Length: 106
Image 1 (cartoon, rainbow, N blue to C red):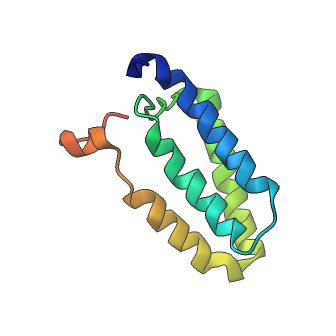
Image 2: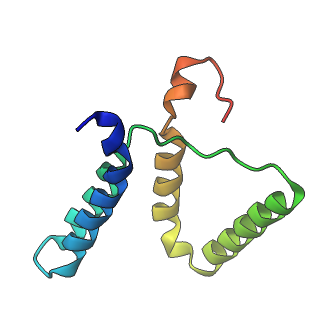
């Protein structure tokens, strides 16, 4: 079977593996599911980071999410270390296109 005809089936197989791992209850299931969710997308070689829409409604939605996140942190300041570690982890990941070029255009 040529590689070209197998590509559309990879996301379906990944979804089936993930759903099969979630069905049964066993020790360490959460770690297995998180690992599957992190590494199964790496098998899909045609996936690309979606373009960020830059319209007024999208800016308003992002502002609303930011304000609600700040309000939640003001309400539950005990979650601050988790928030900071999540933001640091998210900002240190780089898209391969950003590594090849001097600036990221995504």
